[in-house]
Length: 364
Ligand code: GTP
Image (cartoon, rainbow, N blue to C red; front, side, top):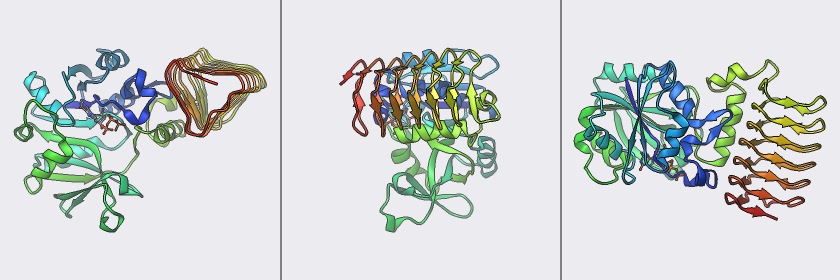
């Protein structure tokens, strides 16, 4: 089975993380995010992945590689300009890469939904296109899908007024399509599959299947962090579980946690990281490879990507530090801050809530 993964967006809501790495290549816990998706696809029998890339395609390729031992084959489709969520399907067909039946996935979702059941329902209904539907508590910021008892889609509601909401099922960005949907995708321009293709298929073989399980679009800082904790706490099926100890902390054998340091679950400390004896890490912390956390420093509810240095007595709470960030002694990075790659927070500085520091920038 083939899967075409949409991985070409700019990821503006995750800036400044996505100023230096495309969203699929941004690390989540211990690996580039997109690796979680590929593992999930492989678990459901996908053996041929086409990554549809545009923005920083080279970096996506570097993060995923051309071959995953024991995994699916990976091919890359590079868009000369952004083609939206349907255009890449046409481009794949023109490049001779498209199968007769295939999955299309939004490339920014951490999930363990049952794609095998999704495909089986598609085949059973003899559908042209099938949408995975996911129930959410507050559907107001998503694309809602109305369907009948038999699963036939009746219509769409995009970010609706609360009064108009009569379903909790949102479009989960995971589709099974027959090749003939190509006829509905105009060539040579960006096309939205949600707005331009699916509405034309209502009543013509478009179905939705409600799937339970874990589903999180990691495209905002809050959801990125929540997805990290959900991985650490085992709420979503991933390979990270094997690296977590029974006490809810995962400490790589090549990390150096000095005696006396407090590491509270859930927390993950990756290879080569050093945690000083009087530092406090967690609950809810990811310390990336080769990070250094100094004496008396406190890290909680935060993710530090590889190679960050947090000085003595500094605090990092509810924040994300991109790779190679330095936080000086006694500084405070709190409440939703995101510090871009290689930036420096000066000793004693206190960042505002929701602060954004550009890659390579200096926050005083
Ligand atoms: P924001 O800018 O923060 O909204 O993020 P985004 O650029 O990822 O956009 P959005 O979350 O709406 O995109 C949903 C999925 O479609 C993501 O996996 C994107 O990578 C992907 N995507 C969006 N536009 C394109 C495109 O033009 N080409 C390709 N190949 N993928 C796209």
